[in-house]
Amino acid sequence: MDLVLDQLPATQVVRDLEAGIDMQREEEDEGRTGEEEVLQDEEGLSAREQMFLEEFPRWKQDQKRVIRKLLRLADEIDANHQRATKTKVISSSTAVISGIMSILGLALAPATAGGSLMLTAAGQGLGTIAGITNIVSDVFKNSRNKKAQAQANSLMGSEDKEFQQAGGGKTAYVTALGKIVYACGNAVDNIKRNAQAYCLARTRPHLATAAKQLLKTGQVSAKSSRQVQKAFEGTVLAMKKRALMSGGVMAIIFLYQDSVALADDLKQLKEGTRAELAKELWDKARELEELVAECTYYYERLQKKKLKKESF
Image 1: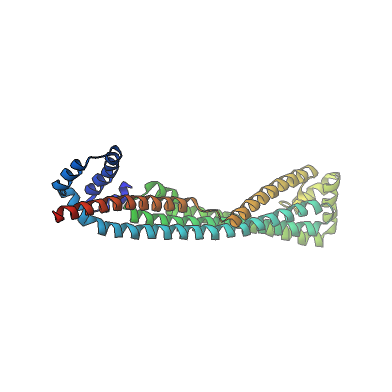
Image 2: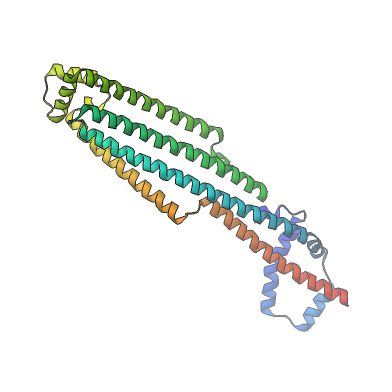
């Protein structure tokens, strides 16, 4: 709370009087005689106490304004968090669909070359969309949180250098852009390879038959094997039986992970889980409210003391 108190023109006065609250309460617990209270009243207010009485009303209004803004920022961050969670639910759902299509593409490869290639290409495309959606959502969420934190720091009269570094600034945008470009490039290449393989399987059915035989039994002539590998390179039809099984296991694992992520996102969305930054701002606002309440208590005590002195 020292950061908040730095907004006061008479900072040290408030610090001293805040510390004096506990001291005075200890004295009240020990108890005073009527004679001691009269002696204290006769002494009147010190210069520091008089300054506190003059500064406190304006300071209190300033702190109420800060509290309102902190709570508003916390609500905005929570709203951003909910929007990001909804976006994650959509991207996780897309990733699950992508995983299912990829598994079906691998499973159908020994039976239907064309259907397998189409499902695999569609699954890869959806997976790329899900990944890009997550990247963009994270960038925007971090950007909004960084802006909110900067506003909170401005209200509190401080600069959170650690947060500014964590935000990433332009570096975060460049990194995200690089990931998006890389993901899009891979997706385009994969779709292009599968499209070419699909056309080739339709125009040269004997190669498609050889590819399916290779996937089912693994037993084709060396020449046919070389032709299949060259014609369908980079697609499911160019896989060997063991590689196909391994790919299927990995696809199931990824599907399970995506399903768990989707369930977690749905749970957060249903429960309305608050963002950590929003909790921090909420706690700071509550701490500031407690400080204002303590200082108000002491202000009222000084006001009574002043009125008693003036009545003599």
